Structures are given as C-alpha cells and as structure tokens.
Length: 392
Ligand SMILES: CC(C)(COP(=O)(O)OP(=O)(O)OC[C@H]1O[C@@H](n2cnc3c(N)ncnc32)[C@H](O)[C@@H]1OP(=O)(O)O)[C@@H](O)C(=O)NCCC(=O)NCCS
Image (cartoon, rainbow, N blue to C red; front, side, top):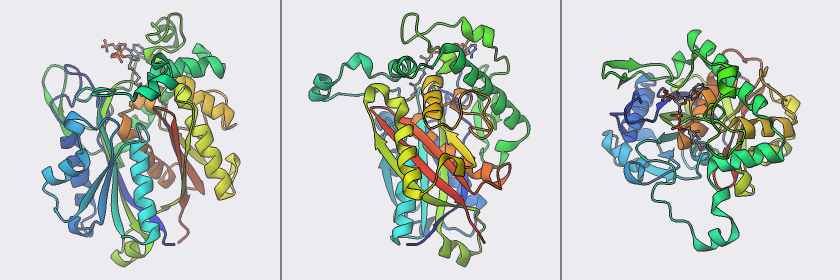
C-alpha cells in the first residue's frame, strides 16, 4: 500500500453562528469553504487544482445552503469541473470521515492528490434542519433521549461526571486556547477571511470568536442547565453554536517527493465504532480502542491527543474510560484548547482537529511519534485516526 502524507492544512477562524453577533454572519458556508480551498492552492503553488483526484467534504446537515456543499462550493469557487467532489455525512465526524476516505483512496492507489474538508454554519443550517426521523427509529428510541445536550446529561449521570469537573475542563479549554492564540500558534492554520464585528465594522478575521477572556469558574457554576432541570450541562460546558471550514491537502508520499513537497506526518490508520445513540458522546472510547488494538499500540504510545470537546461531560468520560487523563488541565490532550473554547462547527471539527494536530506535531510535540484525533457523532458514532511522524 502507498503512504498518505499531510502536505498542508488550513481552516477559517471558528466564529459564533448567530444572525446578529457572528463575525461571518454575512458569509455563506460555501463562501467559507471556497476561501480555504483557495488558500490551499495559494500556499502550495506546485499543486494545480486540475491534478486533484477528488475532493471530499463533510457536513452534518446537508440541506439548504449545505445541500451537496462539496460539489456546489467546488464549482462556485471556479475550480475545474473535471475534479469530482463527494459530500460525506456522518454527523460530527463528517470532516474526519472525509479525511479517512481520502487517505484510504491514496493508500489503495486510486489517486495521488486529494482534498479532505469539512464545513458547517450552525446558524444558516441549524442542527436537525429538515430532519425526518424514520418511524422505526422512533419506536426503538425515545426521541427525548436523542438531542445532543440530553445525551450529554445522560453521559454525565452514567459516567459520574460532576458539573465542577466538566466546568473545570471548559475553564482550561479557554485558558489554553487563549494562550495558543496569543502565542500565534494558530497563525499557520487560520486563513484570514473578511468578516464583520457586531457593530458592522468590516475586518479580517484571524482569531476564533468564542474564546472567552472572562472565563470564571464562579460564573459558570451559576449558569442555567438548558437540557435538564437541575442538570449539570450548562452552555459553558457545551460546545457553542459555531461556523467554520477546514481543509487538508493529502498526497501519496511518492507524489509529494516527486513534487519536492515537505511533510512530516502520515495517516497510520482509522477506526469507526457505533454506540447507543442516547450516549453518543462516548463513541470515541470504542473507536480509540479499536484503533490502538489494530495498530498494536497502547494509550502510552500516543504522545498527543486531539479529542473534540462536544460537551465537557462526554470528553471527560472518554478520557477517563481510556485512562488518558482524569481531570483538566491535561498535559497532552487538546494542548491548544478544545471545542468548548474554539467552537464546534459540527461537520468541520473532525477535519479541524487534524489540521491542528498536524501543527502541534510539527511544533510543540515534534518528538511525539504518534498523535490521535478523535470525536463523537450524533446518533451514536465515534471516529479515531492515528497520525505518525514520518521518518525521512
Ligand atoms: C448550550 C446551548 C443550548 C446554548 O445556546 P444559547 O442559549 O444560544 O446560548 P449561547 O451559546 O449563545 O450563550 C448564551 C449566553 O451565555 C454566554 N456564555 C456562554 N458561555 C459562557 C461562559 N462560560 N461564561 C459566561 N457566559 C457564557 C454567551 O456569551 C451568551 O451570552 P451573550 O449573547 O451575551 O454573549 C448551545 O450552545 C448548544 O446547543 N450547544 C451544543 C451544540 C451541540 O449540540 N453540538 C453538537 C455536539 S455533538
């Protein structure tokens, strides 16, 4: 099999998905995606769009402005009609699934150059938009147990995650994200895109909008729990509604060498696992176990982890069950902050955490031989991907 290496990864800033307050409120999700695709080609002039074998794009709610967003954005961006585009929907893991599809195609020798991407604007296409559940699904499950926040409450109860611990995780997520932003860690991945401040002033958005400067454990402790009366999951311990796009340029190692392109990590495997949709947040436990077992590795072999923080409760349940960590702050998990602070534009996040992991393994964790990126998905899916430093 061929080797699949990461040539580059970019993303938009993650902004608030809000019709009055979101910095990208006047930009459509296809507009965001086109800008990250263009940035990939501008940064890598040796790669011509017509040489791309195919473009995979994940999006969790493929309706309205996100209906077949993979193909429509590619064409709307003026890219060659001869390059195929494939929309992927696996709820939140969509962007990771897109990456796995591209990596597998490269390894099988179907093509040498692929783009894997993800996009979501949770204001333009809200969660559950135009959803029509199969009647048999509704017979099998109580629909009240299916909304994401409700599953986060159930995970907190079953895995015994306290409100304090989940909020501590949110606190550190914001602290680490702010420190990473202030140290310029995201400058290699965020593509500046014009947005608008709340007062309408136009500006180039280069930072994630949700990172809170004023994060306080006392304030969080007093917040409402919208998903359950006297519950434990507040807005602070939930990933917020977000807009964003991310993309990776993946290539066979042979093609990268032929073009004289630099790379430092390769795809070393992926695993998907299903679980009970009413506790969908623990999906990464099962996916990571499969991934590590197949690779002949243990948790201790993984130098650095990116785990999407859909909710504090589910992320902590995964970290504890896998015996990666017990409580924030963590040494080698989400070291530049997680989705509680950076936001979680559903279908984008699985790709975004690989973009960030690529940069983390290039800089702060260059001695880590392996990194894992993993996330949970609505209706009971978990995905995990293994990335390995390339020996040259
Ligand atoms: C939790 C949730 C319902 C809250 O939504 P909302 O009521 O629209 O709330 P917002 O996120 O806009 O936040 C409400 C207010 O609380 C504030 N807030 C959020 N976190 C805060 C914190 N840590 N400290 C203080 N205030 C905070 C917000 O800034 C906002 O106030 P503002 O408008 O004055 O800025 C929503 O974020 C949600 O559904 N999240 C989960 C999304 C999801 O399911 N994703 C999929 C995961 S699998």
